[in-house]
Image 1: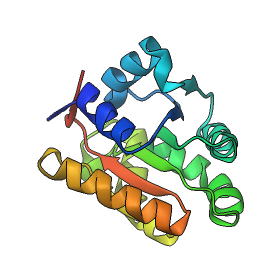
Image 2 (image 1 turned 45 degrees about the horizontal axis):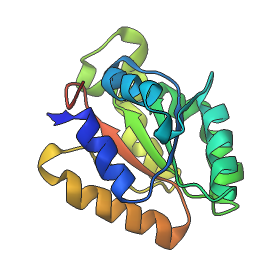
Image 3 (image 1 turned 90 degrees about the vertical axis):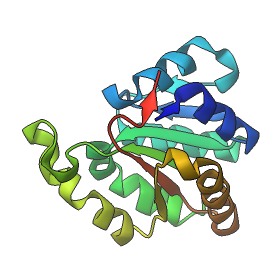
Amino acid sequence: MTNSQRFLDLLEEHGFNFFTGVPCSLFDGLTRILDAEPRYGYVSAVREDSALGLAAGAYLGGRQPVVLMQNSGLGVSVNALMSLHQIYDIPALLVVSWRGEAGHDAPEHLLMGAVMVELLGLLHIPYALFDPATLDRDVESLTRTMRNSSKPVAFVVRKGLLQA
């Protein structure tokens, strides 16, 4: 398990300075910190595709964006990812909760949980599974990939790996 503040500090060390997204219960600790600390520039969004629009604007304004979303929001975001971020080379770090992984969640999350990793591949979004043991290396690697390609990358976060 990783402390949410440690994760945010690590992202900040790698230049991420704009945070947006749609709340997910798996990110309660992150969201509480982001809401409480103005330095993160957190803007809560009503939909994941709107969060990606905010992230694009932030990037074009010189910021380095992080977008928090539940994996069900990945489906909502396909058009914004493909028609905006991928085509116009707008990078962002997606932090995606893995709801419905291996059938362990509410019924409405099971199908997306089963196909999410494959969907990231189809969208040409490199990803890493959030692992506290390799977190520093994974943040470094994803950040490098994102900057070299000017494309979105993703952290996939399983339930219970981020604590408040």
